[in-house]
Length: 543
Image 1 (tube, rainbow, N blue to C red):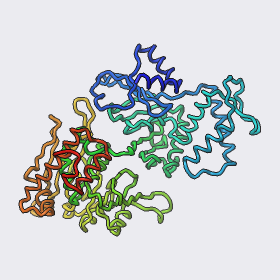
Image 2 (cartoon, one colour; image 1 turned 90 degrees about the horizontal axis):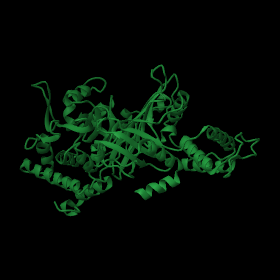
Image 3 (cartoon, one colour; image 1 turned 120 degrees about the vertical axis):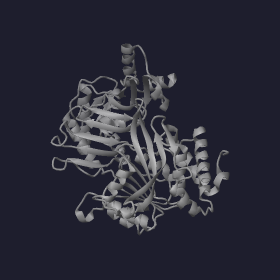
Image 4 (cartoon, rainbow, N blue to C red; image 1 turned 60 degrees about the horizontal axis):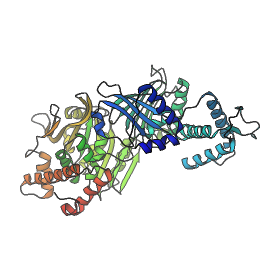
């Protein structure tokens, strides 16, 4: 690692300068770690350097126990003279770009920018006294090799990338970004939870321009008359912008939920303790046998993460139909019809979730996935279940009782007698336990049905989380309505309790994967898909 760090410092002079200054001030140097381990959350003193792609590095420094860990982004800095040259170069490139063919892809735009950069700059090792703008488009701006590299980085960062928050976009260990005003940026780290960063916008005007640019990228421009926008960035990250200071009193603000290109696997969630292998095996049986499941919980409780991790349990030959406001679900199935709402444009051209779900009923899917049920589309989802189309969705409710209340109330208005079309509800929560931020499945409940004599819906808790011991209890063993009355009958068991053997077999497969550190998403999927086709003989290990 020491050799790797030396090479990184040789390639990136600003990194060498930063580390030398840090070493003089603190008497130590950070550890260079290309990858982070979850075990770091148990260490008290954190002093770590992470590469996220030259020329950006991340320095995590502080005490875990005292909650003083801070997040420092290390990137090239422009001094006053270099900022002037950067602006001159940018102006020159914008002027010349009018004569270029309009690029239709980001890759072509990058090629055009770098071509024009070479045309407007004259690179020399000698420091030039001149820093004035181009004269009549003929002269070149003199820059040193170091200045050229910095200007190239800032052009790419600000035009093609995410501007000042580019380091946060590149960092794979960040879940959320929170900005309230131009000098207040915090992140939620996958290992160290909420951290303050050294990243700042230089002024409210810079943040204002950035928000306008980002809102245009997601196709929902903000303005004083329309100050709130919500959508997905090109990399899939979800962003919510509140633009006007009339609405956001501490200054324009935004929240970004990072998109993971590869979903988290079910075995990783087991290893983290979010669920245990028996809960995962139960979901495996449910999805294998076309049960409808809602993943319910509060904001940032891990609903979509859990949903995505469970999707490989669906038959690999199934046709999946997904309907969402923002693309977040990622089934690994080859036959996947992905639909996104269209909220912009004239009313007659808009397409909402209600419309997409109605279209689903004519598309003959084996499974319908709804990103999040919030309104009248919920009633269509229950109609789909009633006609034999299993549905998976996320939902905002902290208990099954509250979930049923929301489903049967305005604006969703599902008749209470229809509720038993939903088979299973998983309740997830983000909890603090012993000073640590955790995401846990706190309950899995089955919807047995509406009973007129008691005037309500009967549910059964099959799994319950014990917060004192951080363990999940299988309360539904030999008492599961869905396993015994639904799935066992589908499988043709004369004794319905034989279905528990199937559950424990799948739990053993998942436990063996965790024990052998098989947590990479695609590797886990292959084992699950192979088992669906070839059974136990297809497994790469003995169970």
